[in-house]
Image (cartoon, rainbow, N blue to C red):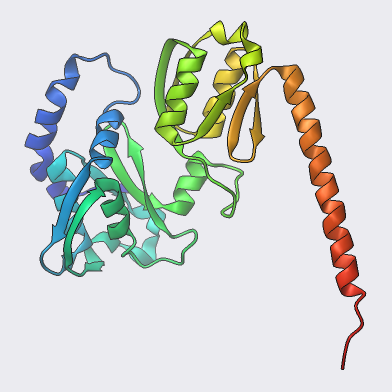
Length: 265
């Protein structure tokens, strides 16, 4: 069960009410307060932990006191790690300057014992809070079918209402720190306007959805998300498959040459 930390409410009530009073007048969406959380997490701060403490107390200082309520997904950590946040010690930290709140959060979460894989602690943004969970739980929810060793694109939290496609793709690229390129040959289709809400969607999936709305295709070229016409996408995929086949042949030949070498006693 996901459990809300009791002290969080008391510590954060005033800060959260102040932070969101101006946002109340804005049009609501399924994103809730995620944009505000993102802004606070990306804010550069001077951080210091003057005494040894436990992780829950360090997190209380970093998050709720600065307008970011949080909960812990106890089920993700498993029955053997009950109250892991309260039990994890954190040694004092000398003053850190010009570091984002998100970076500090990751450093603190790294204190939780883990195997470097499925149990690696991480966090997810929800419309009204930040959730501390594990990599395994995050992957099962947001990246079904992907492996732990594959590249995991950033999650997109964006709302578009009748937004020109180039503007929507540019915003996705900025928000997810991805490289998205729109083929200029699709000049007629890029006039399309898109409407969508992405609440924690992998960046490549979000780009693919927007491209499809405009009658275009997404082609992944290395770490570039290239949005182009369906015809050009077919040609690019054929070229990519041809290159992969050639590389496989070269690798197979190299492996064959290596295994044929005489064994020197």
